[in-house]
Figure 1 (tube, protein in one colour):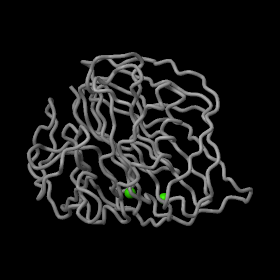
Figure 2 (cartoon, protein in one colour):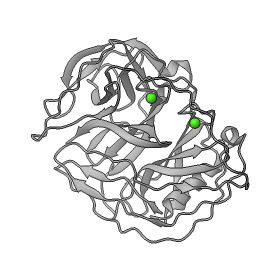
Figure 3 (cartoon, rainbow, N blue to C red):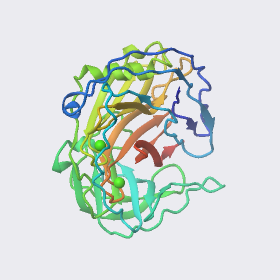
Length: 360
Ligand SMILES: [Ca+2]
Ligand SMILES: [Ca+2]
């Protein structure tokens, strides 16, 4: 199986690194138990195998950077028991919102928010650019009420701010494209090298977090172990990785919490040999199996001297289309571009469905 890495497209004024030359690697034996609560109903996980790796690829584009979800085949952990897998309970989902819900990324009241995409009543839509490189119009939302959330607002009820409105449209990047002002009643703390993308906003009248979203478990050793295993196929420096964020939430409402982990080795002068960055997800099943998979990742193919060559962090977890399943919003920074991607569960895996931001 292949561990694919995020494809990287850079803005036209920058040059993306090319093929890093993935190495064929053998098995990685790693105990990868799910920690505490998610493991409460689970058998220990015995082994995971990483067969080989695909190096990060890149391409050039005349539009702001787009980051594809890792086309990875998952690292599958087999059930410890010989019993047939138990069928998972149905997810606590509802019919999604049947109108247009528009999604934005931003930081607060001072600057316009960048459109990330929209839900059109039946499908996700990416922010798109026409042949001239101009941003195509984002439709008017069907709901006037806007909700904002960010992990930087902490856990619990205060993490979601409801009842806001989209304000005047202003240019948010270097081109003529516009995004709305949103007047927030609180200041969102700026953390984790956000470059102005601290929170996500959506025109919505449903609960953005139907289940708890918790930032816990930074100290859990298994998260570093799993991260190192996932990156070991592409860099010898995987064991030097550091767990920077852990977010737990039952995204699909099946009673088992998914786990999101920001794992990276970033020296102060990022771009040095051995640097890498990524976010991985743990998808536990009711039968005790756990799939660990990179959602996004980046490894420079050669040492470069640039402070923000590629980095990710988890910005928010929120139901952006009203179906009761929470999406994940990741920040990304590539060279001189920054933005946010929306990742939705599709067939049990997080897949990028929208992205916006600003690249020069
Ligand atoms: Ca779940
Ligand atoms: Ca949803």
